[in-house]
Image (cartoon, rainbow, N blue to C red; front, top):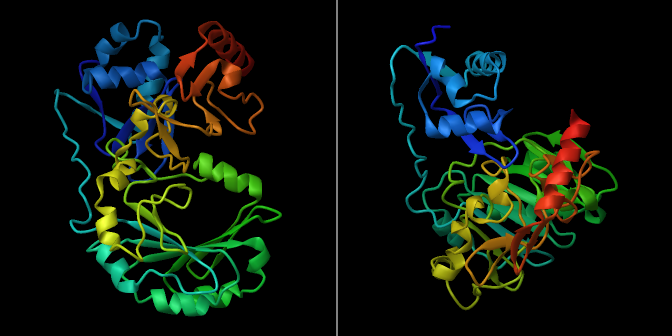
Length: 367
């Protein structure tokens, strides 16, 4: 390597810095690599840096460690060397639609057909070509009638949520062949976890425990980078949920209704400032999430609360602890409270002495 050459990240690589470590995310493949925060901070301050100058910026890292890191970037196509300093501008994510009010519409349904009309769905999706329609089936229903009716909508994908006790009533192979738009069926309260595929549809069986984990921390399966993660919420953005009674909420998990489509047009409810407020909360604004290296790809579904001082937090704790890089089920996992990190309605606080002691203990065990 020529030490006078300049090192920088490729345009398709996104950097997400966490408290304990950072992530390099390949936006083409959704693969990611963990890197030391020192290297992440180096690129944040010096997007294009000469090889010979790296050591003086990172005096605590050996020449061997730095060479290993540079080789990783080059071998995995994460970065490149150039004989001259050059600025490569990454294009901001372009909106795939100018007229879409939402990208995901979820609806509760039981014996009766949902109250949401196909025309309303089409109007809300606008020219968005990848809209997803989600049905939460609260009882055993005629899915063929449901899918026949809503397959005429402009939704590209249809997902179903079913209780395991209702699942035996359906022939999933026949159902998936019948409805090409059906891309995923999630069966909750299953006695065991399982993933299957029928035609172009995935069948995902979740136990009660894994369902809760999935709602609080979505990296059980690898997620692609969310293009709007720095400006909008990864889950709530452009999402709406309709209950059986026509109540309009931000999501299936939300408690509060923002209106009712039986008395007001859905489009008008979606345009309300208070409804879209959840869309614009970024992970960078949420306590604990803003210290997590996964915040660019995580789609957790926990409801958020706003403190009087304007800061945001989740009452339910995530199942991943970014301060010790452990998730629930790992041998060395500890909750935030056990680490001396307290995130409550009164505010965010760290018991520094306990925090340092726990981190030192965890790092010693891992070494």
